[in-house]
Length: 285
Image 1: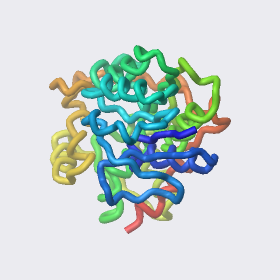
Image 2: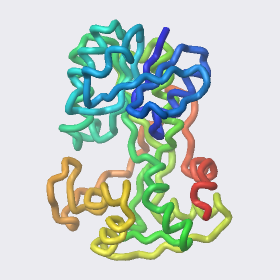
Image 3: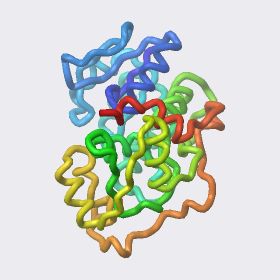
């Protein structure tokens, strides 16, 4: 059996790659970078999901596919996979599909896969714990501070290994076809509590400075990268689809009930404190 991993250098994809490789399967990693390096035994395959005509060689002989979401070309990619003989596709999707917020990004990918007639499983993560490293890492490393307007906003940050383990299980074992798995962390934590957990993990007190939304937007835009790209959505200036909205009128998510985790599939769910310990070195200067 040959498994093709797309998004193989991302936070989830690289862990899926490692997990399925450890099970002794033949693994191929799709990459746009001819210099990309992967673990021993993994075959690098050049190609781009945004250009489906580049995928023939990467898909040749592939039985199972882990699909990173690129909605613009999803149907062409899935058609190419089907022609190549792929029988099972596991989609990296989003819990926003379950919540009804995502209608134009992950949902079209899910529908393209379902319409193919192939075996499918959707993995729908909630809030990525890794987002906090992208948002808060620079100021924690430089100043030991987090600046944010929402100290009491709470959700269930999810360890990327939980997401990857669910995806790997769906790729490797039967019984997951036709299922959509929502994967969240087990702990409902406010931003202030998350900052405290990171401080405990690195052995350093981190100050939480409450600032206004406009100032937070300025700082995120100046920071660049993930923070700049997602500033307006994270701060309530845009909705999930990118439409402008008044931050004061942004809908609040209901966090009153426990959310589904990886445990029913993998037997465990990692808490945020464990995630913070796993990434402690990333938060240190």
